[in-house]
Image 1: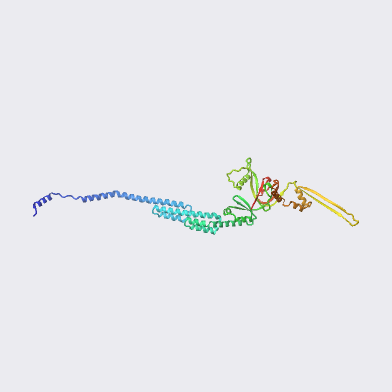
Image 2: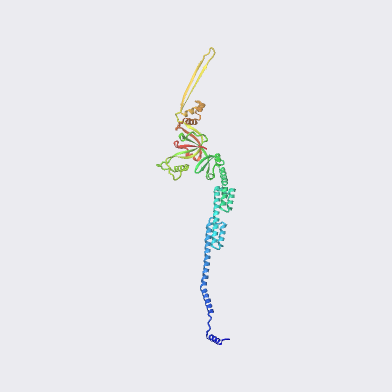
Length: 418
């Protein structure tokens, strides 16, 4: 059974309670407004900042591209027309970031390094051939192979594999050049490392094959006309009498006295002294009587100069005449003795020519006088320093003024052994 009193109490309680207001919508609205306000305040600066960062990033990339292009121009400064230069610049302009740009620069540097290495190898080949590089099929072939090489190692191996063949090929061009230059020449002067050598053309052509490539490239060749000159030389400055056909070097003793002012001609001779003996230019030499090479020469004839009155010659002749008849014959006999003596070599020679003394006897007695004198000196080890030789020599005509009139006591010769 329902308790009416309880129901009545409940109704009275419900009538006395006030309803609660609902604040949730208001709170939501406030939150939304706050968020919107926050977005209004913060988002534009963020967007602006992002835009600025994008602009800065783009500017930085553009600057990096400009710097990279400058680097490409520097790398290709020696090869401005190389098509790879435009290729690398195009790649840089289309790069998306700094890493891509760095990779392009690295690639360009490797390309230039290989190209420079190839150019160095080709320049060495050009140096081997000189002006003949364009005439050599072998040189052109090897340089083309080097151009096609994909790496430094490949290019280097191509060069080394062909180096000796290139040198030998180049030698033949120089040998052919010199052969053509000496046509119709009897004598030539060759200058090698500032040293002068006189050759007959035949001997020079024989020597050509023995020269190395650098010598062939650097030697200087001159055609020379020869003339004959007489040269008196003391035996002490000559040694044994040379033979016809021998090649000699003529020296002059030049006095570089500190007390005297060296004339221009002597300065040249002093320079020749340094050059001949390979003395460094900054090295001091004791100036005095120095042997300076004047010229090479070829011996044609040799003579011994006798002191005027130190040689005598005598002859004696006898003849007997007998006349006889038969029983009534008278006989007569006559003995004739002729004795005479000549003093001085000139008198003796002229007497023989005039028939006053026996020509053949004199020739036999004085035959090879100089060589027999040298042999006797060798056998006895006794040397006569007073003997004077007179040499008839062939010399280059442009050296004749220096050789003619050389003082006897300032002239020496050295025989060249070939």
